[in-house]
Image (cartoon, helix red, strand yellow):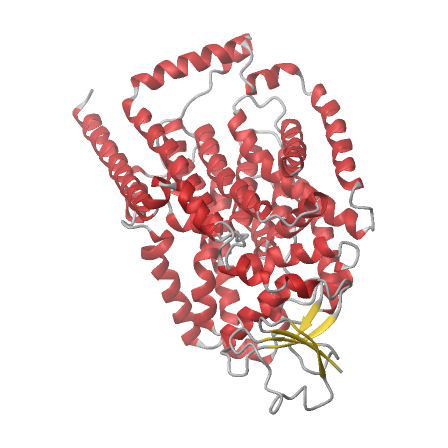
Length: 150
Length: 478
């Protein structure tokens, strides 16, 4: 082999090994992050399967789903002082679990209202807008979800 | 039931790809498997939504799929047994080549090492994917807010969803987004009579790992095994790629179809004659990218514009014939998308918000600077690697140079395509009605990731190196 070809060959191998070095380092770091799961996968599955936040959140809606066998228009009301991000998050989850019901955040659309009071859990009869303007509670599910109608 | 439905989609894809690649002995079964499964899923999704919109009962749709599969089996029989025996390695020459390959492999310790790392990485990442999916079975924000939410909607009101979608007004739910992932999940849920979280998990797994498999096997076909495995490893070991997969986002889905389109176009342009079946297939995968995410429509536009650069290298009549086949392939999916967007979905929030403010935004210099800075910052942070490998990629091009002798047309047009896509994304950010920094921070890495498999493909095919020449004389003798 000519000296120049040998040098090129060496540089090629260095490049390849450098890339392989970066890849294996990354692979090792990734593995370290999940090492516990690999050590005892069954324990991890038992601890986590079905216990995630969204699955648990969805259990609140099991009973309410049976109230609307056909797609219904519902007006959504969240917590009074929630941030935009939290409000959107809880609205989206409500729509996710209650589809194909159509859930609107616009107060003017429907006669049926769904309250999702994930922190306060209860309506305040003295100050609540709907209770003081002709709506009444159809069912309180005692988990922050309350249905009102006119 | 889920296994049966995936098997139907797989057969649909496999038989179609077998017809597309008739008499092409260079391709492997691994390549066919990785290409055909997602294409089959895309086809099933299109079929389900189209027939459902026609009001066909749900139970008839798998029967129609079976009918199409039987028709394709008869068509495949005509392509000849010899080609298929080469793919499935049942003929004598293939068996000899396989033994020869194994012997060569044992003599090449570096290749052996790379193969070992590849399979180890595959195992580790599959495990992580499953662990993360168990931890977050509904996926992350986009998964439950967009794709799985709409799938629940369709599966719970299969004959009313189109009119109900039309009545929804919330911008948060993005009902104008296309339905490939959503449609397939809803289809499985309807036939399983169960909203199992495993359907979207399995779907994401297929798209994530088939992209890696397709990338590795196609680079192997166009260059050599070492390059193919390294290309696959780069994608496989990029941490954020796996995160996107187990989050059940559709970016890996659309990324798969971009990659498949470019690979099919590279195959179509690898000879001297026009190959209509490969061009039509590239059109179908481009159409499926637009059925996966809205960015697919930008991809199709950029694809056609990028092909026009080939006027410098090709006869214009030949190019227009090629573009005609490409368009024919995507036409059915485009018609479905057009119908969905006109008759069912509310308008897109970015398009709908345009007006006099658009001009103000376009003339705002600070927006260009902000977006530019985010684009540049992606070079150092892209993929969330612990050690940045992209400097090596840059060094590789400078040191090794680019080989444009083979696949010149495909490489040039794909490079232009990637530049156009990045420009298109830049323009969308310029006119976005959302807060610019918020929009950039939540999406730019995902948009770049959609193009990432295609970028790796053209990088490894373009960079100079040894080419594995298939033993055609042996096949001719056989």
